[in-house]
Length: 566
Image (cartoon, rainbow, N blue to C red; front, side):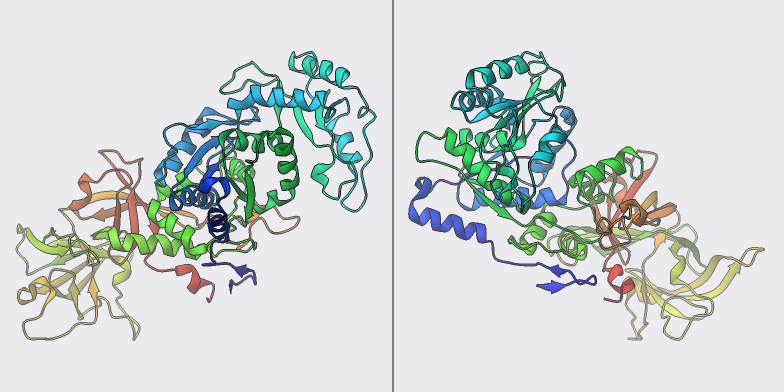
């Protein structure tokens, strides 16, 4: 383990104990060596990076052991579910590189089976209809150190309970008027075993079953049984469900008619610094317009990361690096950012772009000449080849690359100083042109024609190599500089403080007067580039033929570590 600035333990690279368990079971011949996992998201929002960890674990485990993985939607709460979320989840899982065999599953596939199972429990005296409201039921459950007390309706006969349950199904009662509870043990030390609610009345239209049902099963009741009917061998879920496992097993025991039973195994969920992972809070950001939708590149959603320029490989590599443990910890978001830089460094096309332009006129260069300079496409990829970059008399450089009165360790362009223009020539600044307000608007330079390609025939050296773009042969673009959405390491970890108080006011800056070399003009949405010396960028879907829009995926290095003194 390592420790981040807040003192939290950061869990990285731990061995996958779940795979160890599965290997032991295969060696023992359990389930005839079969491995079948599932990823069961609720279709009530877009998936985030925490879900990506679970996707990689469930589908990756199935791949490792030549097994199967189901994509199953836990659609048991129609008041919060939408088809839009279903489609976005399928897109995200597929984009990450995983397949579910062409057929997804739904908890709603089993509504008839679950209803019949509930009837079975009623007939066996293991479930009853309770007329009390949710608040009263909750108050009667006691505390972890004090047993609860039984509902006055717990002693109803199976016949009476079945009649009431069928009337619930028929829509005779209002929402909240009655629930169906499992009859287990009101004195159990596990609160989840104290007669949990398994069905409630919800008169809401379901995105798949329409208005067929007005009673819906609770997650704990639908979850394990769906696993059982699908033949799942390993129900892998996060640590908060560890206390639910006895209830999961109890339901399976009432249902099973053979030796087979799925096994629930829990692992630590992903917690990232500077990130909110609650779907409820992410929905709040979307609905209240703090961000521009679920796929805003500042969001930790998979769709937001994709739009920002993250690759599936970078996210899968990140999941491998952080490992799978039973220990809750805090992962530094810098590791996620490092993963995308590491991946894009190997694959991203290099181009030159200028975000804050300052015009340079090379006074001794022919006015109408356009010279093609040969540039490497990617020095990390020997097969990437080269491209031609147009060089002209008038260029743009970064305004930050020039200082009229530079400090001692500033090695870029300054009056009288010779520097190298990447892939082109050595140039020297001869004159600084200013407007009536004293602002620098143009530099007049001269070039050495014997230094083509950035090499000096006489062997002289310069200390700076600068990127540039032709002022006439370029593509104009809008650049969106995205930064972390929050400026606090644990934005939702402060008691009595709204997480939105930690929103970073500088999380988005839009630059509209930027110039990129012509190579990018045929780029497609989400294509990634490294703008030399500036960072990694990708083409945003907002791009039109009239206006190219680029998102900054990540800077070339972790600037936040410097800011925080790491």
